[in-house]
Length: 253
Image 1 (cartoon, helix red, strand yellow):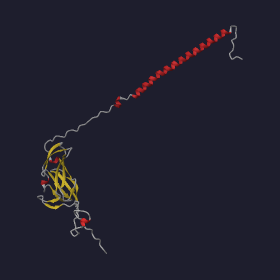
Image 2 (image 1 turned 120 degrees about the vertical axis):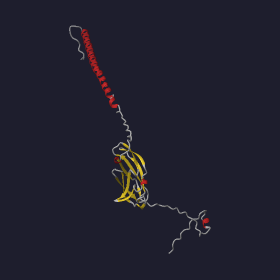
Image 3 (image 1 turned 45 degrees about the vertical axis):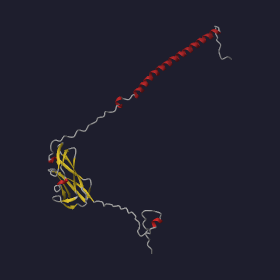
Image 4 (image 1 turned 180 degrees about the vertical axis):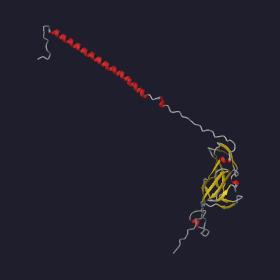
């Protein structure tokens, strides 16, 4: 039995076959046209979407100029020091003492630090007539610049409210009397150094007068020849020069 039906009708079979071929061709052409139309529409939508995506990526990748620019750096210069305005008033001067290290029996370096209280800058002469320094132990006065004025030589200083000017003096670590006579060496222990400008408030700083460490003396003993040793003992050992010391005889029972 054949799979293809034969055309039946009043016309000849050839006419029917031609009609079928034409219908099949028209149907195929319609399918092709519809497919192209659908494909063109989808391609257009994709092309329009792609630039948008690329634009978005471009916008995201570009950093903000405000965020990438470093903040401006500002440099502040220190103001110049104040220019001295005449002499310092005695009641406008502050002074304090500083002692780094003190050892009994040795001169003790005392640093006096001066500053002005209100005047931005002024001149001040540190001397025994303008400054008093006193060493005390409890209620006992040990030493002072009133007894030993030469310990504080005259020094011209510029005092400021925001900086300290230094002057140096030495305490010889002894008890002084009138005329700066040596009365007694100061013993190790706690002491105070009081300092003040005339008409100013005194300041008090405590320090420790340390015990001096004993000096360590190292002696190197050089062996010498034993005059009682036989003359051939040095040559017998095969050495020349200074003979070795004789061996000590061990005690016997």
